Every structure is written in structure tokens, then in C-alpha cells.
Length: 477
Image (cartoon, rainbow, N blue to C red; front, side, top):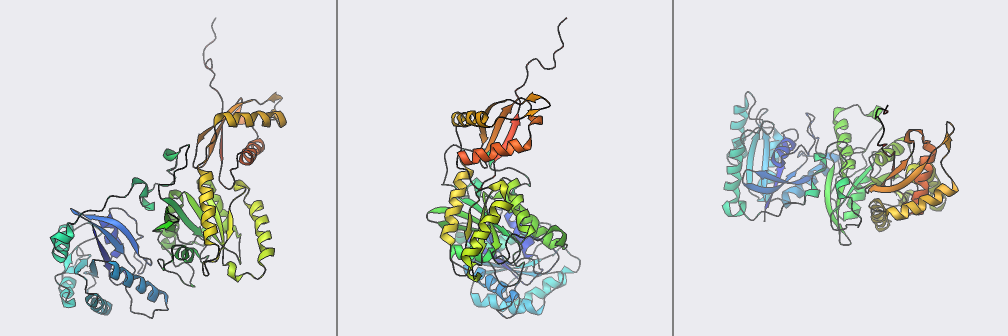
């Protein structure tokens, strides 16, 4: 089996940069601002011939447990307990600070093997910081530059020495399925779902679920409640989550990959570079997901930003499910529920019949019902209708409500077929696609959704014309 390495240190020493270097991808957000990382992130890593899991952690700060930095420190302490080896990272450029000495003592008390990593060793004047690092009593500092990839051979040798060859070169765990690539690998706008389009529903692959919403809607709390542990950092402060963190989970025998995302505010309010990076990371998670749970604060639901998030999910072709969170704070649940259902149908016509569930992440109410709605929506998103059934349906539609005449000429529809799933996509062969009114296309979509029981998912309807084999030929004299 492989081993697990936790990268720890005070803020702004380059832990996330080293994490990205080891996993070979830019997964963790990196910025000059101290304290960018807040949640702990785990990913498979490789250092030449060594294969292991690496944990990125928040900057270690000496503060009260009730504060946000204090809760971040608790997450780091969990990472230390989980790890087999610790990369204690210091900044060789700036030298040691009092916090470095404090946390070196914490690491020593853990009893875990330690490799002292002196990052930013390429900087001018870093030699002084390297010599200072000896004072920590954690052994020889290994000079590296995580940003430029320098010093990696020495780091590899230090890992082997710290763990011993037998532990370092133990059996590698089987590589993850190709489907389980990280969200940040997926190219923006790429439709990853098309290759998987199949007639049968496949429940063997992990179901990818992104949890999105405005800041402070309770996304991280909801994920913690679902998996039954304090895996993600939560609190009363808005905007705690910055990276899109993936969590593996098993629900009733079904493998799930949950992605927590940063809260999405209106574009005009997002000014800081770091928040822009967080939102972009969240958008990539949406594009990577199959199901997207939109968490709405039941006390202030359906603000403009909520509707824009839902519209984005629909345009990306993902399957949305709404979770009205904080239901335990509602005084008149029956009255509000009827109002919310009416608003959902009226404000989200593009996903008519969307699954909407009332939940309380704090008390655990409604979580099973939420997951049942997720599975139901996922099956609809994967559904396929045979061409025979579609054309029998089309005959009835054309007899009851034929397309209108445009410029004095009747529009003709020849046939319809399903071209893809995830989301369901249909091709309608007709005489003049450009002249077909959008109102009639919406009528076809809504009728098809109702006839074949496809509620709550986006449906694509493409109009095509049959090629005229004689078009463009010169007339024979």
C-alpha cells in the first residue's frame, strides 16, 4: 500500500505550490495572499519512483479554536494524525518566524517522521534562511523551489531515508479510474458527458455531484452532514470555502464524489483576484459534475444570483437539484413550501419539474430524500427514448398542433431522433430550420418532457434539414 504525506507550515510558505508540483496539476489555488488554503485536500502524487497520497493543509496559526484560523488549525491537526510522513515547510527566503518554532514543537510531539522542506531556495539570500532552519531540530533542511521544480531529487531521497525503503517502495495502490480525474483538469466548456452516452443506466461509476450556491447558504455544512464527519471547514462567516474540494463517499452502496465549491456572488461584487480564482474553480467543478445541488437559503430564497447559477447549470447541460437549506429556521413551513413550489415552476421554466427538497444541514433533516432526488434526476439525465416511440409521439403532436406557416409557406417536420444523453439531446429534421419559431420549439420540448417523463433536466432540441443532393449543381442546358 502507498503512504500519505501531509504538507504543513505557517501561512505563505508555498505549501499549495509544492502540492501542485507533486500531483502534477494546478489543483490548489495559489496566490501571494497568506492563508489562501482553508480546507485540507488529498490527492494522489508522484515523486519520481515514489507513489503516495499528499495532503495540502491550511497555514498553521497559533490562535483560539473558536476563530476561523483556529478551526483551520484543527483541520491541519487532523491531517497530521492521518499522515505517515510530514513535510514541514519553511520559507528559506524570509527565514524563521516565531510560529515556525512553535509548530516544529507540535510536529515533534506527533512522533511522525518529518522531512524539513526549505522552500523558495532559489531566491537571493535564501542561504541564511537555510542555516536558520537547522535551529528547528528537525534534521537537515532540503532546499527546494516548488514553483520552479528545483530540488526534487533531494526531496525524494529524504523521503526514502525518513520512511525506509520497505515503507517507501511498498505496493502502489491501483490507479484511479480515468473518470475520477480532478475537477481542475477539465477544460472550460468541454462536454465530458457525451462519450458516456449509453442506452442503459450505469450505476457502477462514481456519481459526480457539485454543491453550489451563494456564500453562507450552508454548502460545506450540508456535505459534512451527508458524509457524517467534519471533513470541511464551516462557520458563521461567509465565504470560508475557496478551493473546490472533492470528497469520496458511499451512499447505500453507490459511490459518490462530492465537490464543495466557493460561494458565488454577483459578478459586479467580485473584485479581489483570489475570489475570482475561487469562482472559476467552482465553475470548473460544475462543468465536471453530473448532478449539481443548488443550495438555497430557505430564509432568503430565489435571489437574482440563485437564478443565474441555475441558468448557468442548465446551459452547461448539467442536471440540477434544489436543496432549500436551513428549514429548521422556518416558522410557517407548509405555507412557505407551497410558495416555493410555485416560484420554482415560474422562475425556472427551462427545467420544468426540477426536484426541490427541504433540508436542514444542522439537524440532518431531509438528507436521504435529497439523495433519492439526486439519483432520480441522474437517471432522467441518462435516459434514452427509441426513435420509434419518438416518431409515434411526433405524429400525434403534428396532428394536434402542426407547425405554423411562415411567409405563406407551411413548415414541415419529417422525423425526430435522440442523438445523445447526459443531457437528453434530440434532432428534429424539418424543411426550414431557420424559420421555425422558438415558441414552437419550446412547445415540442415541453410536450416531449411530459410525454416521456423527463422532469427537471435540460433538454437539447436541434433543428436540421435534409441535404438536397442537387443543391449547387449547375442547370444542364
